[in-house]
Amino acid sequence: MALVKRLDIVGVLLEQVQEFSSLARRFQSEQITVDGKVVTDPNTVLRVGSELVYHRLPWKEPNAPYMIEVLHEDDDLIALNKPSGLQVLPGGLFQQRTVLTQLRWQANNQGTYVACQGSHPIPVHRLGRGTSGILLCAKTKLAKARLASYFADGTSHIEGNRDSNKEIGKIAKIYRALVSGIVDNDKVIIKQPIGTIKYPGVAKGLYVASPSGKPALSVVDVLERNIQGNCTLVQVRIQSGRPHQIRIHLSFIGHPLVGDPLYAVGGQPNCFDYNVPDEIFAEDGGYQKPTQPVPGDCGYHLHAHQLVISHPKTNELIEIIAPVPPILQTQAEAISVKWNPSSETLAV
Image (cartoon, rainbow, N blue to C red):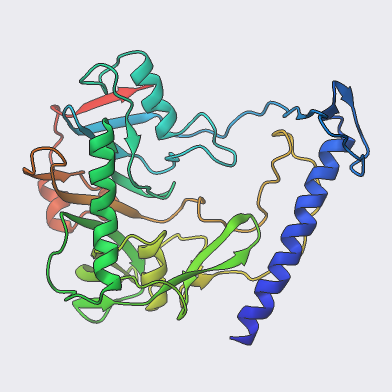
């Protein structure tokens, strides 16, 4: 506990140093103007009514997938099959190559995502950039409010310590994951709370397993064990929706996701190195690329496979399935899987 507190304090100090250093670099590169004049001194005193403008340099975003499969669509919602590597919301290096940007582009151009005039699809939850599978988006204010309440309802039930073996709320979420090591028990229920710590490159803090965190519940079922490959294919049902919950919970029980660059055994980050990175002005307009693994880094295998939800308008029960990638298929599925030409895929 003392180590965590010390790291938190060091993290705060480091964050303040990095923020000032980043601002100073922008002044030195003549990206800051005050009342239309370039200012290079970060200690410049502003007068009342002065206008300070930051002129961000253009940058080329990293490559990202742009094919999005439509799994379900009606007048109120859209369910997309998000590929791994595509970020949901703008942030960091990704400002244009995101799901939200594609949805807005399609809405403005009256593309196939839009079934009713005037709708603006918005994701009602998030998937990690490296996570693939079902992403639910609302097309109306009513759908957005109700769908958001469905996701929140599961979490509130967990906080109320309801029966973890019963289906609750109006939504059920099932994932597939490939974890390192051999999971001994056929079924594992994980109730480890999740909180945040200060961490370089993550402004609002990194989510980790923490005894003082918020309640979280994951139910893990083993599908196949690969003794030779020393890995296990699992199905995970979550009733709460803490950020990176599955990655944290599986690493907490000693089975991090295969290829996860961030979370290690115990539900903690692989590295607690709080050294200030080299102050190299990035070519992407000043955004300092993290020198350590961050949540948006890919490499792991996690797929939002199945979603059962009560329709926000009709209350009809809808089941949505996103076909699993080959690496997350059981041997029986790999043999029987067939290409389905009826799915609708859109390139933006």
